[in-house]
Image 1 (cartoon, protein in one colour):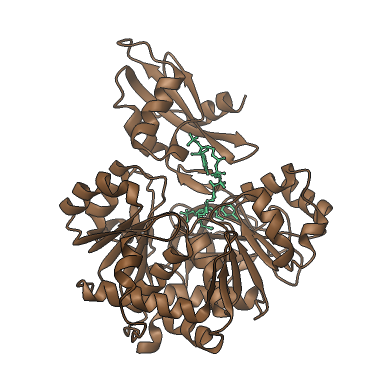
Image 2: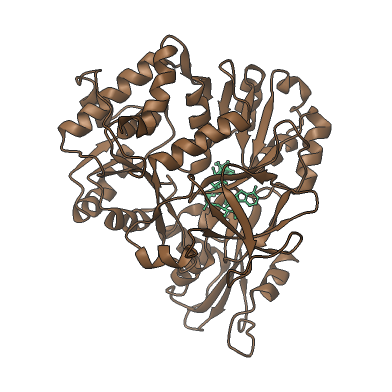
Length: 501
Ligand code: MLC
Ligand code: AMP
């Protein structure tokens, strides 16, 4: 049973490579795999000594540092459930996550401590630790005197390892419960499928509060005890500086667009590279082709989601096709209509999936969970998909009202509900429009009630007051009324057409 803790899989690699560099940062910090094991054990000891028990949640909203990764590993070891939160979330957003997940501990940036203290107490948080952008804070101070020995807590394969909140179409975020088996199976699949080797060096520029940067990238590296060059964020100059030493790079499409926009970027940066992957949002064919023309490397696009990790991937050895997400990984997939009738190849429908990578359900939402699974256990992804004659799968749209901006999901309903509360707003509608940098940009349409004179700046400022900045509209249009059909439903396609002009 103890072997089912995901950390055991990593530990087998770490112990065999204890002297090897695990992380190196541009600031010159290096961590060996021995230090990774030692420091994460200290953190595990601290959290257990403070009363953390297997299954308790640990909410974490901190900048990207190696110490934050060690906190994640410490939680795994101690059987605690890791709950990462986007650093862009405002207090009111964090409030919802804490009151819903009722974590025992909160780890946050020191500057957020005051803002979050009351919210955390109200949610039942027992203790708040801090961790800053340099990897310092009360978490590291308090754990420094703890033992470097920690016996990894046995876990069953369906015990929770993490909860990732994903926004819902109703505007209310849902916590996707991911088990040790979900994460372990997906990591093992990817390492094999993408041919990771011991001497790979991963250049890591993704945020670590989502499945892409935290699970996909880091788990692959951990399963081969790879060196990770750990950037604190995506910055084209830092990527270009470190790429020559790397063999693998993973990014959202915006990363590739920004690299290509940089005139200094070229083939010489990619001399040791063996794999560039892209995902979290559609990679434009234009970007795919430009990248190949410039570097000689063919980006491998894959498709996944918080609820299931990676679901399909273009082949490592075979042909990688622009606009396609390749073939199913180790999960069953089928394409069905809204009623669940299975469609034939070539027909567009909603992708449904079943496999060891598919999550256990939404935290404290049994009805929502039941409605998103078919009776035979297939999960309805909400992604409109088609399987071509060539056998490749293509994501052609979404059945859910979702905008993906620079790899972050934005649900219009959440923004609309909030904007509708603004003084001077009668009603609002939010859509995405194509954006050369972010893929899609958030655009708001507002109908004023005439009580105050609103401008776009006011609407954007209001949005940023309570919502993460990436959710704020990049553009605001004022209309006399929203276009509606005879049923009274807002015609979002019409709004998308206006926004795209
Ligand atoms: C930042 N901004 C964004 C934004 N990121 N706006 C819209 N969409 C985004 N993604 C805002 C900032 O708040 C700022 O506004 C303004 O845009 C300019 O910021 P910037 O300096 O250009 O942003 P930057 O820090 O460079 O961030 C852009 C980015 C980042 C693309 C590097 O968003 C990023 O790392 N995205 C990756 C997301 C990711 O990992 N997704 C994986 C999800 S997992 P202001 O107003 O504050 O000045 C998943 C499953 C799967 O989907 O399949 O992988
Ligand atoms: P998240 O809920 O943040 O995990 O986002 C998952 C969603 O991102 C999926 O449901 C898809 O809509 C989208 N997505 C991920 N990878 C791709 C891809 N390669 N192409 C198109 N959409 C993608």
